[in-house]
Image (cartoon, rainbow, N blue to C red; front, side, top):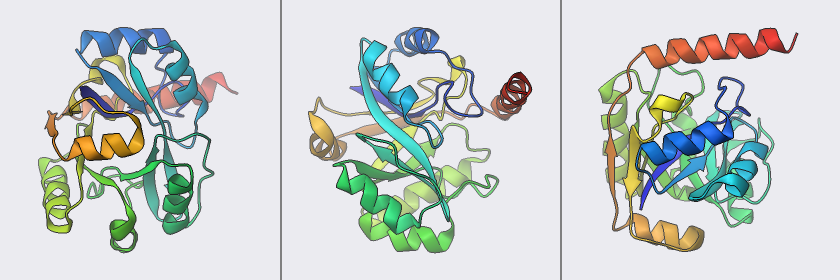
Length: 216
């Protein structure tokens, strides 16, 4: 199963992606599923799960007090701005998996701090070793090296905020059932990815500005 573990819908403040067009984009990319990881929002993930004819992992990209952590296989929304350990605990309390995205992309203000990463490393379930939106390849290579050093299962995702990005990075795993089955499948999976380049960030800034203006 080819699964893009990091995607966004119109519920994220910096994306205009609509559900039906996401479905088309995912199918066009040849993916078997996606994780919907909107910023501090959960409704988009639930709606995609209701609509999509493929696997949708309900998730949330949560802003903690020290950078972002993704909760996969969530059942309900988790509030932002908590301590990273408390965020991980709340993810696990729902039976979810804690996933740290773009841990070494120093150009993003949202990346997890070094101290927080060290603190949560014994407690997380997987680490994003390839994010297609990372500006420099070394950000991904550092994440891969860290995952290998600490024995953390590897994840990958496009971080899609626009339709053309779906499938730019994904994992390929055996079929599974539920969070624990997914975690086990990761041990036998592979990841694939290509960088999408700096222009996607320009588009995202424009989309965020359009949403701000529309809400005024």
